[in-house]
Image 1 (cartoon, helix red, strand yellow):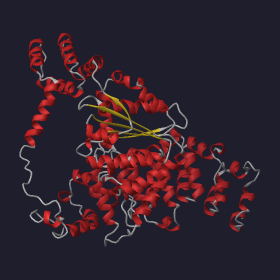
Image 2 (tube, rainbow, N blue to C red):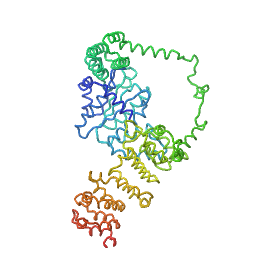
Image 3 (cartoon, one colour):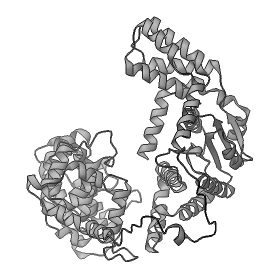
Image 4 (cartoon, rainbow, N blue to C red):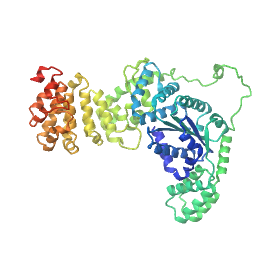
Length: 591
């Protein structure tokens, strides 16, 4: 998704919105947008005519319009690129991920379906038919308009393109709420596969060329003197002929050569190849590249694959032992990772970021293998790779020295995609759930990014894990975790989340945190006032302790000064604490 989002941002920065507005007035777009039936619309044009830029404009415009509609339609997009993402499985993965991000309520259903598929020995992330089936069944019951926008169909080979179009048609036939927006090069072999779909052609327009040139020059060449800039705009507007890519390449070349003076600029523009010459250059390069392709003079059209492969180089990774090596590395590298503490032997942080990059196929593959150490069909435990990144993996498996190095050297708040959002909070959650060493939380807390967990949300996670199972309460290290409260009492008082935290602690019966809050409140009048303010609680503190049958917490609260209002509290049904206690008939509570 990060690659897709970055592609969309890049297109936003280079486009001139006013040059794309003609699409909104096209009758085919209006008919497609207003139709209540499944519709497909295709933007077609020559290479470099601005199809991708136009698609980014339509995606943003559709999202803007959708904000005024109820239920609010969702737009999911994918940019096909020749190096990656042009296979149907990649397209569907991105569309589904975008759908889950916009409709979080679907995540639980999807994850449950994913786990069932994994348990049956099927990897949905690599199974196109399974993803298509889930998408089809989900859209049938979604009850919300949806738009799929896919740019660059021409980047797919014919077979992939046909499979993708067939699947999209099968999905849209099952629901009237899905519209599909596509873009592709203007080629006969591609248009044959798009028969029956509405089409808008990106034709040349001198006015649009002028707008595109002005936007590009103002963005990239704003430093030029006014007279030189005007010359560039005039020359490029006159010669562009609808080729946005030629305009951008020319401007980038001017920028690279650092041409600023009027004379050299005029000479450069006079010698610059025109767009038509650019197409001829492409054709010449392609012809020269394929000039050495020889058609076999003798070929049997009916021979077997074995015959075809007879003279080929045969390489089987399994025979070479790479399968066993991958299994060993996936299952035991974490053991080595945790055993290394000497600074000279610690692995590079950059290597760990590559190996454990959030959402990467590499992270998913080694985790999936780690769950199946004996290569069994069923994993020995559930381990959702989407919840992990380099910091959370290091927090669980790395040595303390390595964890400190990752915290010191990694750019946790930077623009990269190696880490999950709020990575320190995610790592703290994993330590609370799985680590045998809760002291690692203090390492996170004291790091330069530790501010991410100096808040109520962190202690909410602490209480959730502490109360999860009876055995959790006897886990070594809780005293140190509750001791972290000492560092946030001032923040807690200023932001007024002490009362909510106390109420939660009472409800789950966490006496150590209740005691810590009241101990701190003895010397902090504002905090004590907030903790005892019954108007801040949905129920009285005593009532919450009684409802949870937490005798020890109730006994502690009853001896606190100022607790009387909580003892005398009546809920909306007129019940007092004795009425609530009668639910459990616990003699200790009545005493």
